[in-house]
Length: 263
Image 1 (spheres, rainbow, N blue to C red):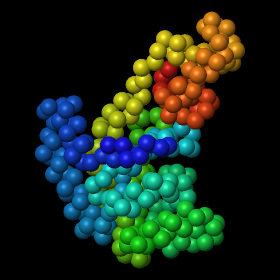
Image 2: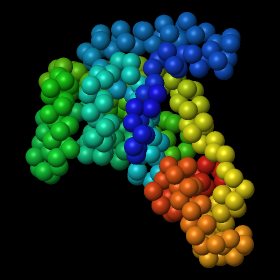
Image 3: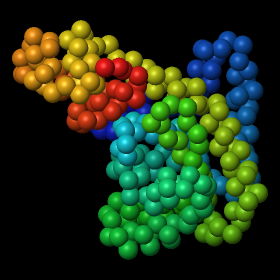
Image 4: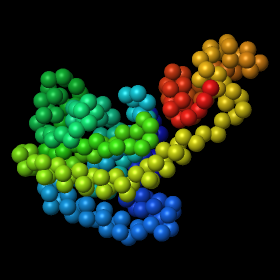
């Protein structure tokens, strides 16, 4: 279900959605076993000292997020709604470090607070306050592999503990196992969502304009080649940008090429 219709688009999904999709694509799939695995993940999460797991898949164009797929299970919904609505990930030093290194990283709320004070970033300050009010005092951030182009997956495990000394190599290994189990089960559902979002039905005129944009033609050259007017070409370009969920023609060309459209 789409939570907001503004840019970027936020799509919530549940473990039940993922399990139903598994059964839909493969009637022989052991859905009960998958459901049991997810329940086991929750139990192990609590046993290890974490109390929340936030799973998010980000559909990107360059550094800009276009769509967010957020799992509602195991997460604090009130925190997640605030986080996505105000795009706090853009000012979150935890994820900046993750995207740079790609390695699991521990964190403490105090580090986010210090970053907010040092930079004067209002969204980082909002993040710091929200972490503390939701008792998210420390945790572990992980990045996971994604099969789709321009898709990034991040998992954040949070704890009420204020220290991070207990998050040792063994804890990180266990957390990674939990995250990969969740990822394995929900990944087919997200893949299907991404594919559906990319299945666009273009009119003949829109396809003709897009084909020539991908070849690098100007609006005037496209108008001449299609026996159309500059006004109509510009109108088609605006419609294409909306359909592809981008803000300008450079992003349109980049995204169309990444999705397999050819000039």
